Image (tube, rainbow, N blue to C red; front, side, top):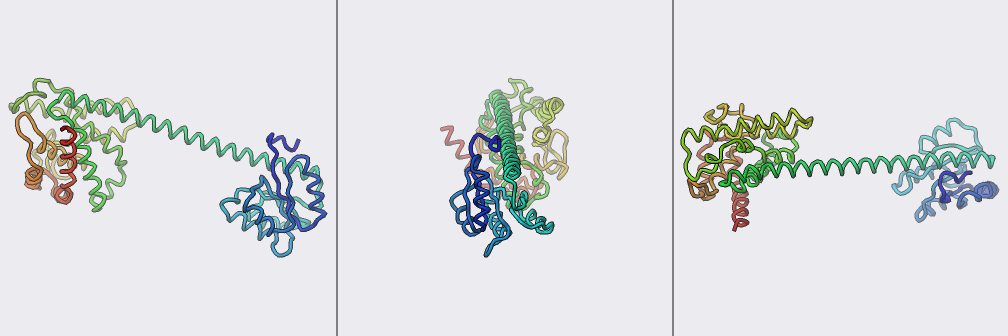
Length: 366
């Protein structure tokens, strides 16, 4: 049966300036389809403004607007370009057929047409169109499923990451909120880098969202530091400070172990760099490796500023919080020794944003 492609009756527009052809065509199709006959291309285009058929049978040789002119208009409009068009022609013209196909027609039917052949050709093309739509819907649904699954995985990853970060802060109860604040400061620095075009080529390859998430693991190595050192309510001895310094190498080792068990490396590679290098100094006097200048990865050079600023403006058992102005002065004084000069210059242009974040967290803490 011609309507076997779908239980719903399809609608066909039959366009021909010959009344006999319209009558014969409608008679052949009416049992299986909703058929509307039109005797000119102009009337078809007017009809298409309010009604979209499943298929158009379009005569080529018509006065005023021929079939080629009409299909150009149909295929040029977003609302109608998807409608399958079959040309009707009394000519046996290979060049004409090629022109019509190049304009977007899906087939040619020669007049006078056989009703049985006409039905079969229409049924075939409607089935093809139905399958195309089903394939598009399947692909769209598949894409949606992939996006939802990806979103779910990212949300799970983010939740696990946040839990690990909070676990570190719970053990080091002298630095509450440090991870969130330093991540915010890092975000400000990354935005500023983009604005001024500094290290543009390097950061263009970064997924900045992943970079910021990975930065939350910069202190993960503190998990391995003893409580009596990590939570000591006073200044550390040299031996205790040497123990604290190990959190950089321990953090790197922890992330390396995770990397061996997963194929997702980009996120962990950033996290490893943050953990291992955020205490390195521009002049080579930092730890754990004493890296110097641009031997320190950019992630570590950026986090050094964010980390130190937060330590300065926060209360610690061994000191009161410095004012924002004093913190800015200390970081400025560390230009070329503790910190990269270009990054200090950048920080001095946007330090008010750091101050805003610091005040916001103090306000939340009451």
